[in-house]
Amino acid sequence: MMIDKNTYLSTFIKEIPKRRYRNLAWGIFFASIVIFLFLPWKQTIRSSGEMTTLLPEQRPQEIESVIAGRIEKWQVKEGDFVNKGDTILVLSEVKNDYFDPKTIELTRSQITSKESAINSNRDKIIAQDQQINALLQNMELSLDKGLNKIQQNISKLKSDSADLKAIKADIQISKNQLDRNEELYKEGLKSLTDVEAKRLKYQESQAKLQNVLNKILITQSELKNAIIELNSIKADYSDKISKARGERNSTESYVFNAEAELAKINNYVNNLEIRSGFYTIKAPQTGYITKIQQAGIGEIIKEGESVCSIVPLNRDLCAQLYASAIDVPYLKNGSEVRLQFEGYPVLQLSGSKAFAIGTFAGKVYFVEKAANKTGKFRYLVTPKKGSKEWPKSLSLGSGVQSWTMLQSVPIWFELWRQLNSFPPNLTEGELNKLNKKDEGKKND
Image 1 (cartoon, rainbow, N blue to C red):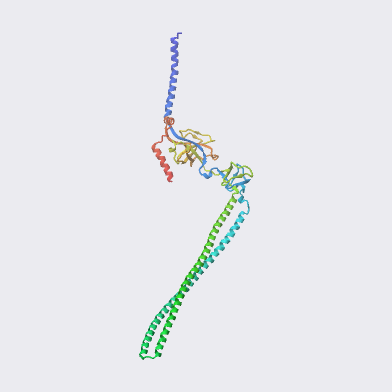
Image 2 (cartoon, one colour; image 1 turned 180 degrees about the horizontal axis):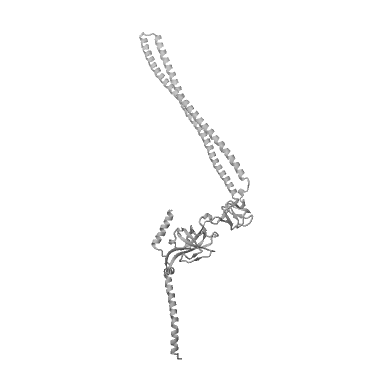
């Protein structure tokens, strides 16, 4: 088949403008892509998590029964609003030791009796102390009396010893005179009467000697008896004082044991009174009752078992978010974060602050230093002062997402970083700035 040359040329000439426009369009398209790749892009750290509270006491908590008991009456139902101290549940006793309603009264009577016994024995201790003091004084007087008697016998013995010496000297003199008179009588110079007089005197001196010796023996015997009596006094009074002190120590020991028993009884009574207060389970704080976990009347609950949950009324909400290890070095206390809450429409362009419609501002409050079981690092974000308030209808546990703005980089660099899973391109100066800011907040 032959193509007309003229027809082909005319068709080719007509297609030239269309090709030019097509090539121009492709050129503009590729140029736009190149320009787009070099446009600035704000690097971000994206995280997700849920809502919680900053203070632990403001989080939902389980209300547990301190004691085991039987459910007698429910005062609330799920969804009810309660104030702090309102009664939630009434229990009755299930342990045999506490069935008697007069247990506290009877135990208090034991306390009164025990206190009376203690006071009586304390008075007895005072009397025993007085008895011991009296025995000590009597012993001292008796010992002084015995020592005086011993001293008297010693003095008497000394006196008798002196008399003995004098008598012995007198006997010697009498003996000498008798001998001379007998010699003179033989010579006829003395009469028999003189000799007999001297002999009588000599005999009298010997009799006196015997009397003095008898006195000395009697005094020595009395001295020994006085010493024995003194030792006997010591032994008798020591025995009496020891017995009195033993009785006092026994009484004091009884008082100490009674005081220990009294302390146990008082502790038991206090525990009974405290336990009686646990028969009603009360709201620990103001809030709403949720998740009633026990059934109806008559059911027995165990000690420490949860009966329901309470959601506090006043809550300082914060976002609990989780970041990967690669992003944690760039999360510092005080860093600004944009948040999206579940249930609230939002338009957020990751690389631009300008496109943040429906998001809310926050700041990093705390970053954990250790990863959880999934390898994520938890951090808390609180509302930023001076910015738009967070919605008041936020619920605990609702989902939340965050964007943390970092350095501006070209789009091509960000694409390349994401493909290679590199960390954000934060300069050393900016990283030092964040570290200084974090150190400043710690010092404050």
